[in-house]
Length: 280
Ligand code: AMP
Picture 1 (cartoon, helix red, strand yellow):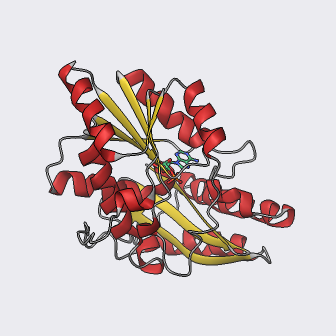
Picture 2 (cartoon, rainbow, N blue to C red):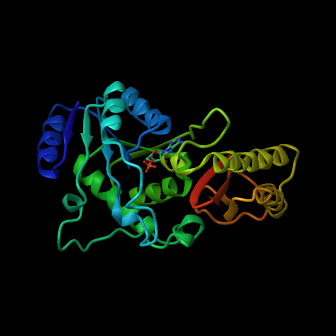
């Protein structure tokens, strides 16, 4: 496994790999890796010849009042975990390598970034799309791996790759959870013990949605009402949104038909957590 910090040295390596006809798999991450990330790396290891993991806390996707500075980082442990999963290449650039002075070009995916997390985090998906487009250009992956955990992000990346004819296949992998159901997230370390218990209301609300759906409920408003009641029983929980949308255009569904994503963003104390399930 080799760690690259500069774009030019990695570009040279990529040219070599391409000449050898190897398939490249890219797993973009912001580090502080957990089992969710590992599942993506393992998938890439199975599918492709050369697995690249990028570790980059992307300043462009954080708002001015968000947690960019205090976002958890542990490069040493991340490298150990990647080594264990037999990743080939780590790309861990500094911010000024990705955004040098004079940088002025951004990718903006429209419409589907106006809702859900896009509505409460203006500019977030512009930062995400831009960094992922750059990572695609730098690493030239055959397949890139994303988690369903960030359901809207997955839809945005799919849209971008399709609209801009990027020659990469996007694979979206299932959400990995803690034993008690909490979706794994680097931000879970922010939770104190009381908050950690209350954070479970997020998954509980999604399971409630699944149960109601299984019983035949198709009215989104009713399901959202019941989910919100459950979440609001928790003193530390403050709902950003509880929505039921289609998985491609992310439009609100009044009545559930076909594939629907039940998606939730809740602030637990100061920590904003997201989660979702797909109803079929
Ligand atoms: P992040 O480091 O949080 O930007 O996440 C990097 C990638 O890992 C994204 O594609 C996420 O959707 C994915 N990911 C994060 N948490 C999970 C999880 N619990 N299960 C599956 N994938 C995840």
